[in-house]
Image 1 (spheres, rainbow, N blue to C red):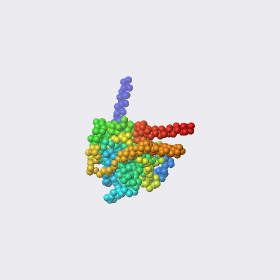
Image 2: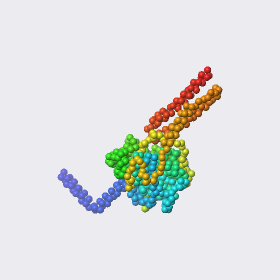
Image 3: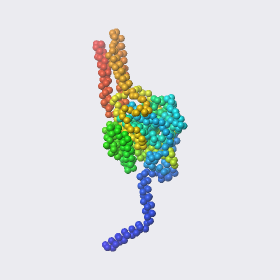
Image 4: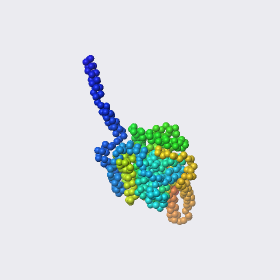
Length: 570
């Protein structure tokens, strides 16, 4: 036993002596290799893979319907979509790309022209313009008869017109002779919140109103739209809601979250994603302090101050203001993936499979493949809205791809043409949800919030008044006309045959009037049911109650006619 113990001690001593003979530099090198391997995995670097592929990049994968004319006649002409994408070597990581885009991004230098637009509920939206001739220092305005293509840009969750990627896109399209306008969300771009109606990730009313306003003001200009990040989710949801009725000729969706529930689970899954979650929540709270008088009145201010994630912020702000039962309810109703099937406009969708915020798990592959109007382009690398390329990281790949697609679409015969539709009655039952704040971390110098009286008189605004009152008056007049006609339709004394013929014609006219009166009610029910699924049964009840007197009168006349026929036969 003593010999074994002695042998064990001597073995440990020998091991320590052998370890001491190894130079310290070797230990440092081994530690460096281990840390590098962990960092390579943690940061998701792909520089070694790029070197093994000879710095040729990876092909862009396209998903589309086999019979899609948009692909065969438009997207097939875009070299960027049929080439390869290679990330900037010193930014060979989705996190490095996303971080560099947020910190600097190397945007081009130019100055916007600002227009403050007041929406129907009193909210203020900043429209930042860059016209094609602004690049030549010319002081001109757009003619109402101008046929120059117009591009509307919808920024992301924490971005406005000053974001680097927005400036890259705006400058690129302006240099090609397009007029570009960035439609900032409410409370962003240095503009205060001027109404109780706030914006969230599924709020499409502001985009709809801006697009309709621009279409009325420049009816001859083909209009296109590009949405980025949460702005892409809003854009696709809007396109699905409008269908054939949108005035847009084409659109592009860049790094859309698609399914907010899936992205919410993803962003809280890993350590690095939780870092993004906390960073964005910190920015949201900082912005909320700038609008404290409004948010403290509308939302749970104490909960907002304690929020440590986007989900907690949505719980204390979005769900309260927008009247959602839960956060998941809000996420499900505002996810654009369920609206993809109804998109009727040529749409290019671009996503990076290594996006650290919008996971590939949320991409609706099958829905995009089933829609002939959609072309989905995915790359292995790119980060979130970055896609830097070149040694100097001076360009964004997706900006060139979108520019090629929209220009090819504009030169083709496949631009979408707005389908004429009947005027739909605006009902007071329309949903009041989807009104919660999303904010801008980068903006500073915010204007102090004002009350519900509207913007100050010094602001340049566009006077756009709602037409709900006019439509309501027309509806009342139409209803009165039907009632008066029903009470005054009388058949004069004639021969039995002529009387029967006149009675039949009178009943047919009466049935036609009833159908005409019911048509707007049916359109209103269909329109409102799309915005608020919970009110379908309520709307059906309202339609039944309002139409029952007419239907009852028609049924009584038919019954009286049938009951008289047997008596006359006898």
